[in-house]
Length: 395
Image (tube, rainbow, N blue to C red; front, side, top):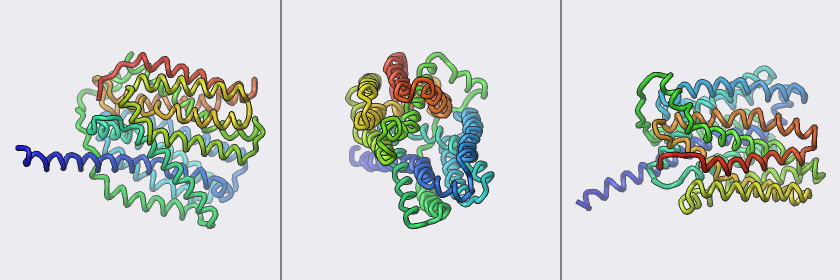
């Protein structure tokens, strides 16, 4: 029997590797345009003739797309196949971004950014669910590597945008080339995505009722806190280092890049291995306590070097949180992975999109940015407490 079983095992391993590669590509499709856009914002802004006030509006209105997209995907999750939603969302992202960069009107850019926010939500929840399906196939932690793909894609996109700017390549040309290449890769690998085998029974009301339960509450709160911490670090890192610490814009840029790189490297090289060795709950508790302690100390020292060190080690310490939250949500009894992941997105969006810019901004005006950033320490400590309250089914 063994000689006959070997080809089947080889085929299963090949299919698992292909599924992992296909899902990793989805994470790159999601993140590379984000990094590329961040690098080309000054060019697009000049292209449409927007001043500071108008550009602030251009980045506020798309929150409508976030809300609509999140509501839509919460209704669709668990009722439409994850593979179909992920591929459709990825295709729409690749189509939307070059069209935004091609627009010469402010209205066109605002509508484009709103559409981008909407279709990205159509993609991200099934993408996370598919990643959980792959992790179950491998029977070992993999979510850290997928998070690393997202971070790597952002860095690649940013580097591509910077090089394109230096070569005087127009933004729409850069994004059209990027979308074309990624689109070809998607067409070649879409059939490798894992099939969603979850049962779709019952009404929409039953599906929603299953998700809004006592077991999901601490996970949703953890998602809110994770979104708050991550987005706060992104928004205020460079400002704190360059302005509050007086180190200048170059140092602020270095701090942001170093922190992003540290989080990506930790997710790629450490998170999955440490999760397998220590267990998810223990790792999250140890990492968050480390991140809260070191970031708090660096805030007290109040020097540029301490500030950069604090943000770098905060990113490294938080690298295990997002993969763990997704795994916890996707392994809840009675829920499909996409239904669980939808609750993570429901918690993260207000933490990242509303609380992070608004709360720290308001506190900064009252007590200064250095003290306002202490709210990050509190949020990270709450994460270390909440992770012990979660119950989940092992994948």
